Image (cartoon, rainbow, N blue to C red; front, side, top):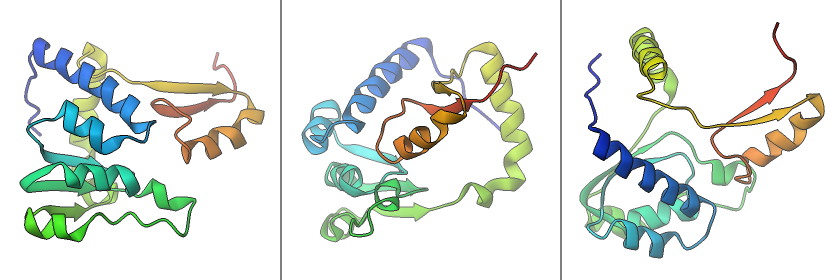
Length: 162
């Protein structure tokens, strides 16, 4: 598996964009904010939310844009909510949406794990974790996943390992 190097200046730009997108994720002015931060449009978009966020991304996609979709968390807790974007945008902009599951790539798992562990060890990739402690924090931690209450990977720490 080949992982290309990313220059430090680009990493800094990506960190700023990630912070802005995290702010965006927890607010509801998606379309306006995407236009401001991506004035030239979006070519590639990764979606695991659906709903208003996907609609805003599609509205800001460039012609020939591509979307990788692996989830629709906006629908998990609301049966009446649909994740589908404006189909006119999909057709007129010739946008490709491809769904996938992590299981589709299990044959690449050992290569991915090896590369990822190396990047974590060297600091090239850094994790963002939201840690709660105690069994009593499990229910609110789980429910919070569906309401955007966590920042990063949600972890419930049950005990200290000695």
